[in-house]
Length: 298
Image 1 (cartoon, helix red, strand yellow):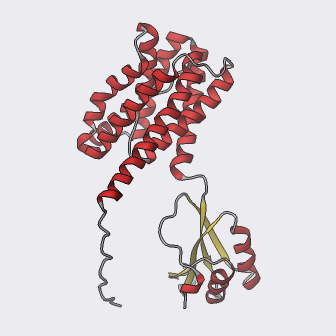
Image 2: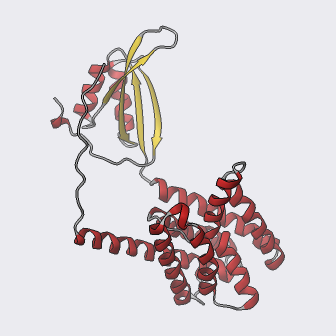
C-alpha cells in the first residue's frame, strides 16, 4: 500500500526576543545547577573530607594538599577537556559548559567555609542527593561540569572495545584510591557511596520523576477497548497491526501512553470489556508532543 507524501510542517522562525528568552532561561538553569552543586560540595562533602568523582574529585585533593582555591582549580583543570569536546559535542555545548564551570567557581567561593553537618552519613547521603540534582540540572541544559566524561566519550570512540561507563568507572577507581591514601579508606568508601547516590539522582532528574506508562493491549475487542480509553481516560490510542506467532493470524494491538495514576483505571476498563486481554506495559521517562483530546477524534 502506498501513501501520498505529506509536506513537513513549516518550522516556526524564532524572533530575537525568543532567542534572548531562551538564552536567559538556559543561563538561569545553568547558574542554579552550579550553585546547587556547590552547596553539596562546600557544605557537605568538602568539610568532611568526602570527594566527588572526576575532575572535581581531583581538584578537591589538589586543593587539600596545596591549599589552592578549589573553584579556580576545577575551572582550570576542566579547560583542556572542554576544548577536546569541541569537535564531538559542538560549540554550543562547549560555551555552556564554560559558563556552568565558571558559575561553579564563583559559587564555591561564595559558599566556602559554610558547613551544614559534621555527621559523615548525613554528609554522604544529602551531599550525594544535592550534587546529583545540580549535575542533573546542568546536563538537562546541555552542559557539563566534569571533563572526564568528555575524555571517556573520545576514548570510547577511538578504542571501540570499552564503553563510556566502563572508562568512567576505571578513572574514578583511581581517583577514589587516591582519596583512600590521602584521607583514609573510610572516607574513600563514603565517597564511593556519595558517587552512587549522586548517579541515581542524576538519572531521576534526566529521565523525569513523573514517569508515564506505555501500554500495548492485545484483544479481539480492540475497537471497544480503544473507544473506552478515549472516552473515560481522555487519552488518544493508536491501532497497530501485528501477526500472531503460533496462530499466524493477523491481530490488532491498541497502543496508548498514560500516567501511572491512570494505570489502575486503564486495567479495570480493559478487563471489564475483555477479561482475557493481554497487556504489556513499559516505563516511559519522558513524553513530548501534542496529547490528542477525545473531542478531536472522530
